[in-house]
Image (cartoon, rainbow, N blue to C red; front, side, top):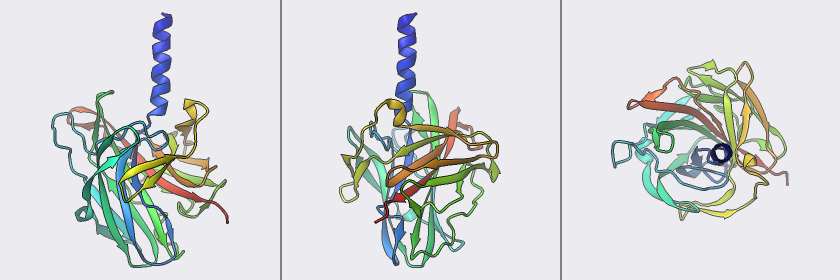
Length: 271
């Protein structure tokens, strides 16, 4: 019995340390002028970087499934960015796996709201699929336009404060929604991007901080009855928020599907 309890405890600890996050990464979310934005799309564990997952991995095929949707919204206009995706091999701390690189010319001022809907990923350890519909906003020249747009996605986190204009030590607030309706008491995982990112080499770099215990690797919070949550950001950098199973789709290829909502926000130090 004692051995069974220890195995169970280990499983819980390991689960806390292995939260999956679909990344849509760029070095800076607040730009002074129109620029070319370099983006990297990777499925990994942002804080500990224990394992990088192959985007689109399927249980019944050796060929990963392609990204389902990738687009940007600026001043209410939507632009398809699927043709810009280029397959890459992303080098994590312990392994390498397939992801994507893309380039986007932000010609106009305002918010550029990126939405990535990858193909469901097969998690063999749990025999389930995971699909993380991910949002990330880059602002140009400080003029707010689309950062709080509600897109009616199957799984979505709608921000209540600008995700690119947060001082370190301040807070981020959002609402978890499913097809435009709040998800009461949604379970949310939060992780800090705890490594430098080498966007030229498509690789994770130096680790920044160490967690005092595994429960600090992935912060677990819950939304309230209206799907709303608030979280303080103690360090500058990128923070990922993932609302687990918030989406309306629950099955893929005959297996359970966790359709999650992800949003990335950046905190900046005062200079």
